[in-house]
Image (cartoon, rainbow, N blue to C red; front, side, top):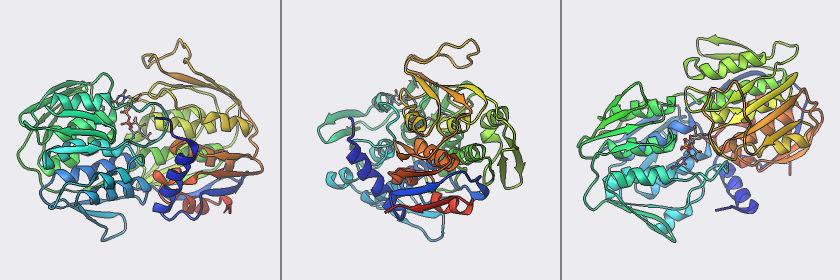
Length: 459
Ligand code: EPZ
């Protein structure tokens, strides 16, 4: 469903309001290196799923390291619609009490429709708790079609009945949910989470082949194991889940946000800066660190974070293929491309995960970058990642002198890349539709201020 720009902008400003963003437009005076320290807390792509997992427990859960981002607020509101009492006794701590889960009215669910992709993960827990789930149209970044066929096929494999209606999707499980043998056509993060959140309380054993194994998935498995689940991991992307009768609440500190950490590292490179990212850990960023080093960035792994800096001199071009973990994450390529626009030579980014995640580069070209997108991808002799039919490629020729422009945020990571480009450019830029960035970057305005960025909110 193609959203009109106005509805996207409406969603963005609502997202910004949820976390107190002063305005949806910012004026940035570029040309200054970013220098200082930022704190990165729990990963957007784990915290939101761990919140849904709390629905499966028969007692309250405590989640720590929770960032103040609008995607968390949306999931909190959706849990509230189903009667889950969510409180925040301390900064970064959520207590989720699912003891009074109840049916929700469609109008309440629909009010949150289009704001996030997470509602799709409510299916399994709601089927276990209520015997039915009503899923409205999903939101999330427009970086491709974002189909949910893997999710629906998995739920049917457990014995669920999926009815598509004008309201959305209604799922029931009159005979309960039984363990299943499922093989994913692609190691989808969301579909793997869908299977995990359904299988843990299904009757019998589930075998999941070709599963996603991102660190956020491993952290979700840790959460479920704390609740009482029995989950076996094999080295070949196969996961076995033994269904259990009861699950209890968990206490868990979320894994750090790798995507935010990598975004700040790319910001240091693009602006010639030096940023210490507190909370970042090396093991989960290994592939990013290899590429960061090959481009010419320096990093130092410290006790409580990682320091990323531009050592001076030219940056080097690289060829990158996005992939599932442990490959180079698709979420890392957008901020990195801004840094590659400053490298001396021709870089290539093959986007193999999403079929439409390079559109954001047109605005970078308006700022003076030289990026050509090949809609059908590019052949390359040094490929490591198997070629996918829908992949695209960006060829970035640098170094380009970026100049200010007025840009409109299209999606979460593209939006952050616009902030970096405006900060690296000579002159003044305005970046509008900022609310989308607050979906996944906690306190990004305050963090930019702390790093010496020169900006003011536009009217
Ligand atoms: C998750 O999205 C993340 N979002 C994305 O991060 C991330 O880019 C992506 O995983 C890949 O790592 C959240 O966790 C909320 P997928 P998800 O299912 O689960 C196709 C960010 O910036 N597919 O792994 O939606 C799909 O079209 C966001 O933080 C189907 O075809 O990603 C895509 O091409 C952006 N059918 C590929 O699989 C399905 O049913 C990977 O998607 C599901 C997916």
